[in-house]
Length: 118
Image (cartoon, rainbow, N blue to C red; front, side, top):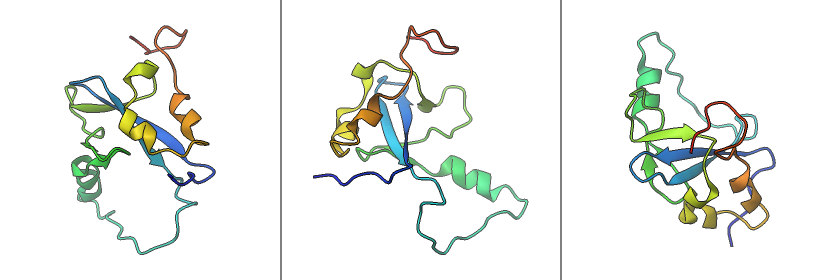
């Protein structure tokens, strides 16, 4: 059985442009993560930005996505507005039964909100 998510974690949804499938990853605030060794890249050369753009975001089902790409025709993009039927079943099954409701806490197309299309 999957383990529970930390109390203040959030789901970040990633849409695959080619299929329309919406995957998700779990965001855990930095103040909840255990302290460990980190390597700062703030040297003014842009290495930190390059590392962010080139590193994949691995979603819960294991697929590697690249939603941080600045390209207008990127293969993946972050979203918070989609039909529930487009949610990846593999990602959903990785959630503990008490956390599964989080997968449906997003805007739906047709709601009265900006930038939310079908």
